[in-house]
Figure 1 (tube, rainbow, N blue to C red):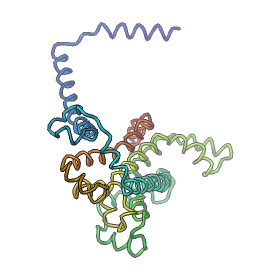
Figure 2: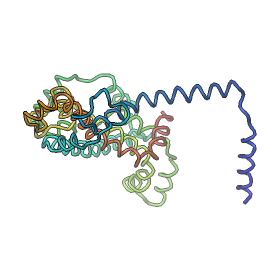
Figure 3: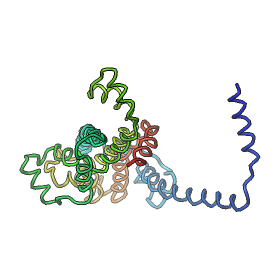
Figure 4: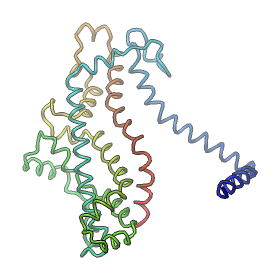
Amino acid sequence: MSMSIAVKKHRKKASFIRKTPGEKVFDTFNSIVLGLMALSMLYPFWYLFALSLADAEKVALSHVYIWPKVLTLESYETVLASKYIWLGFMNTLIRTCGGTLISLVLCYSLSYVLSKRYYPNRSFWTGITVFTMFFSGGLIPEYLLIRDLGMINSLWSLMLPTAINAYHIVIMRNFLMSLPESLEESAHLDGANDIIILYRIILPLSMPIIATIGLWTAVAHWNAWFDGMIYIQTPEKQVLQVTLRRVVLEGASSLVPLSGEEVSSKASLTTETIKAATVMVATLPILFVYPFIQKYFVKGIMIGSLKG
């Protein structure tokens, strides 16, 4: 009861605090600038969404600003009729889920070891890990290694080379170092070994940083296209982003089943609406993931970035 009264008094006191004219101008200026920045990022995405719903035969591209006058799902029907879109979606989903899981297991395991002060030569191994953030073997040695391992034209070539990320390891290590050591000490006194402490105490407390790194890794795998273009040779095994690249750069006729009469009648308008629909199909799934782990995101990255 007393706490609720104190909260009410604090709110009442805060309501009497008046801002100076300079503060009001500053807040208004910030709101306008941030609003324009948000609009500049959201409008291109909204324009593509509106364009993907536009009727290419009746509405010119120059007439689509906020919302098309004539709505149609023809572009989505055409895109989803292509087997390469579905195969690319499945390959990307397998890559994203598998690559994220493998990366989280490996990065978390190494981060847990490097976070222990009693680990021998911890600073040396941490330095070696950070060294890889700035220097790498290069594209050609990496390609030769993947070829010699027999992973060419396999989804393993898209998941294993990027399984361990030095930056993610540093963030996870800092987060784990922020956990109180007294938790492990008391668990040891109760008879728990290191494995039980890891899976029953440390791992549940690490959900914020695991969700944060998992989101970063999943988005990186979902948006990646360059390694798929290099290592994957069969169109049926190609990821969705490479398929999207072909649609955008080479046109829709090579992947989307349009007859010659349809192409000649709809011309570039159909091609543009199909490109927009393909972008939506490739972008929307990963956007739906973020709201489910948003509550962990800020906490994980803030704690993981403070303690070194």
